[in-house]
Length: 446
Image (tube, rainbow, N blue to C red):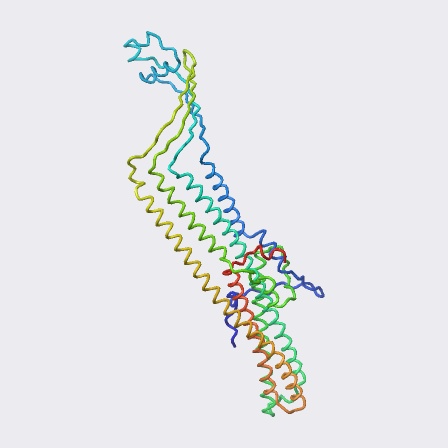
């Protein structure tokens, strides 16, 4: 049986069946959009991306304020008998007397307590363009976080849609197998020639029972995989009822609604994020190079000094130049920034090429699977007619049970093959959505 490879790696999870509702009460139907609403609200991945975007926005706003002047307060209180500090503190009090110039007063001043405060304004005029470059880089990083936020939402949405679509495919398969098993069971209940004394009839009985057991195994396998998918979805949307069932829509119809292709081909959000990060790295080159350039700024300072003689104020204002003429650790910073920018660009190009290849592969797979499913639909109608004809022939004795089982087995195979094709289409559609610029916001109004 070609049933050992399943979508999302669910085989072998061994999860128990979901609890069923009370007798006579239908299980609640939960639409995909109801689940998505909960996931989008509660997803830790989406929340992390939104907080990251918020932090990047704050950082960009802070970087844009680089041209504002710096105003700060410097205050201190201290006791000293240091000759230089004692003399300068008295001078700042504007209370120097002739006695203060005596050798004893200058060399052995008494311990005194002083208080001083300064209000300082620093207004940069030129910083080598470094702060401007940092602001530009921060803006690009904010753009990258916006794309990452969109990518996180898209990824969560596409994964959830894939699980829901797989659940629909498995449910349809299980119901088709269950219907076929019911027909086989009805045949077994009226099969009267299955004694061991009749080898042909007995062989037919064994064939029917074996086929029934195969169908029971397929039902159990489908049910286990459905339960596994439901459990995964319930972990993401905790308000979904334990005994919920998906909508009655078909798998292909659901994919056409939830994962329709964007009207125009765009780069996917994760590639856009990588490109914005590369642009941010490019902007950092100027910031690193500016470290070795001079800084010119205006400054102003107002002081208040208080001692045991008096209090006095003063001020100073002017312009200053600050230039690191020798700072070895910063040598090569520009080359490093260039290498980092080149690496970021190359990484973004790798992602773009991989995404393009995966998109092309998904498009080809989608075309083949759609054609295959269309042919299977025609085959299903033909096989259903053939099954009915075989049953009539079996009832009037024209064919034996083994011949009927052969026809029924082809029908079971077709059901299984159709499910595999639908699951393949789910994989193709999800890959196409991720790599074709599909964004979660495009389906919010569905």
